[in-house]
Amino acid sequence: MPVIGLGTWKSSPAEVGSAVEYALLECGYKHIDCAAIYGNEKEIGLAFKNVFSDKKNSRQEVFITSKLWNNAHAKDDVAIACKNTLRDLQLEYLDLYLMHWGVATSLDLGREPVDKTGKLITAKLPIRETWEAMEELVKLGLVRSIGVANFTAPMLVDLFTYAKIMPSVNQVELHPYNQQSRLVEFCQDHKMVVTAYSPLGSPGNNPGDQPVLLDDRVIKEIAQSHQKSPAQILIRWARQRETIAIPKTVTAERIKENIAVFDFELSSAEMDSVSALERGYRYVDPWDWWRIPYFD
Image (cartoon, rainbow, N blue to C red):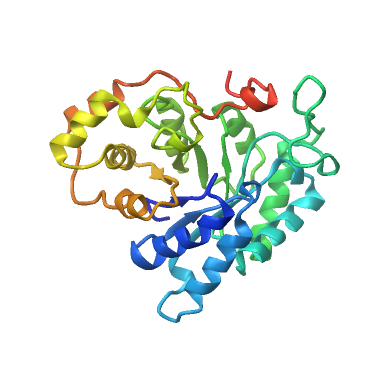
């Protein structure tokens, strides 16, 4: 699994295809992170078709992830959802398929059904049912590996009790303001890769009243000392924690910049300075849109 990937959350359908092509053809990316709920997999699929139609670019050299949305957790819906994603992405298989959240909703009620008070309407579907259906996807050859996203340690402990195929990845929000160090250690102790989404502090998802990680004084000072950008410092920090970073952008300059982090290293003192920024701050919190205290 390549240690730097291109995230596609909130990448508009009009821009995401060219961003993916540029990342793969011009910048050396070998890892693209997708999800059905992002609403742009058809456009990414067109990009994949263009890239892989050239014999110089092999599908086998690119690691592609997608995710199962909450309303397809029923055992009969999992394979359908996966096949829909494969159709949209114009692929025969996924390298990794993740359960996007440990929350289930009914397919009949749409993508994110809420009641009159704004609370998510959940369905009575256990994670076990969904996971066992995902294990079948591996047996069918539709996916090479399966994992989870946004799973807490107690959720993982429960999953471990019945999983026949252990989750290979946990993708969670990770950056200096929300390091989740104990969860990272726990996952790595259990041979799970940890993928960091929003490694730059989710600047594209900031309404303006949240702290801007890229403007943090400590990050900017370290960036200046290395003649690198603040984003490169954050990605390098994630890398030196032995996590996978998937920063998202559709801007060519930033796509190129974000993967140029292998020609320098942060010192132990610099790593400690960044780690001292911990404040337990989440940019992505289901309480804000589902009224579920998911991480409390």
